Length: 218
Image 1: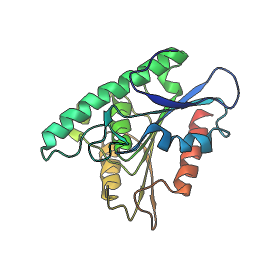
Image 2: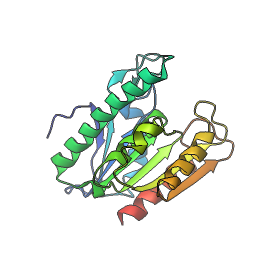
Image 3: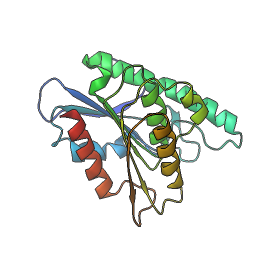
Image 4: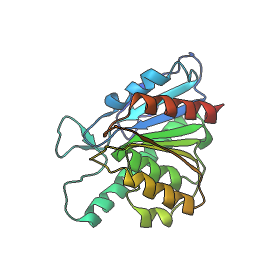
């Protein structure tokens, strides 16, 4: 097996056969792959031919040394933050290419799922893929770099964005902004805002994400 550019937790298909689908789970700021891999544990029996990867982001988190960050958020200079986010995109994209090559599957068999900062990464990387991925699910995130994305959209996968209405970390307003932006760029977006929910993936969000993947992979 390839030595991947990012350290990763993986959950093998329930059926002990060659995987037919790849689901990559991208954690949030200060989290890690093991943390978000709980989704894989919940979903795997319903997606028995899928292999799950939950990579650790490339940097140790600046405010939580026990976790990781896709890019640093402590700078007050937005240009520096966006520059670092582009470098993180390159690493995540390389990781996806390595996994696809290793398993000899096409992007049409790949789904990206991201939470918070991982959602930001998934949107940027997923839409820049020259060959369309199967699905993209984003929880509690936003579009981090609209100008850069506008100049580099190469494909339009099926997208489902979800957010809690009481999220004080990443405002749910960003979901509405993302829906408007992506719709304007010719994409059909499914969205859900959860009542009385803060910055987390609620049980209903996990269930809806699973159903979205099952439908798209069928």
